[in-house]
Image (cartoon, rainbow, N blue to C red; front, side, top):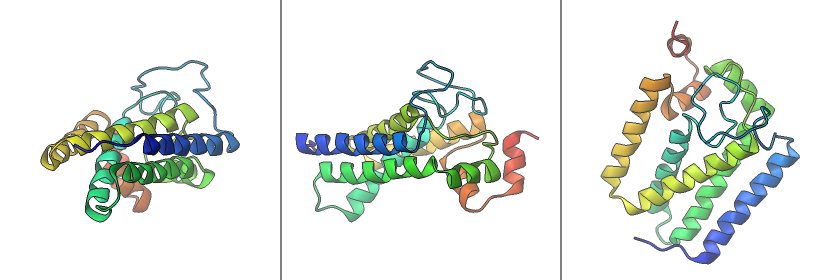
Length: 187
């Protein structure tokens, strides 16, 4: 098990603060426009999705952490664990900023089952970043086979529960399929 030095935790918090400032500048809503905060939002195509602390896509962000940990272990071995966490945080939060740009919001609406998607609240974006950190830390402590099994279990679980997961999300953003979109809609 690798200990992460305090300076790297501070650096990670600075990265989160910078992402927050960018999201504020992009005029993202701080919390759900409904006016309250929920721990869990389970309605995938409802207005509260991607607005609260966690939702079905939180599993994908934990998997991001698994993947960023694995990438760091493979390609950044010489860097301290904390530096790898900071790099993972930059990547995750850069995606959160990009994901809330008009171009990506429009892409989600056009290519995926997220027809009414309007982007994330700042709270949800930061929570997604926190889920990635959680996944990174879990992966740093578990054998890789256990982490891989967890990732597969999360993917299968969300596939069964909501007809979506990280794999389908990436596929539909990069190479949309009408057949998958119809299946996801339950038609």
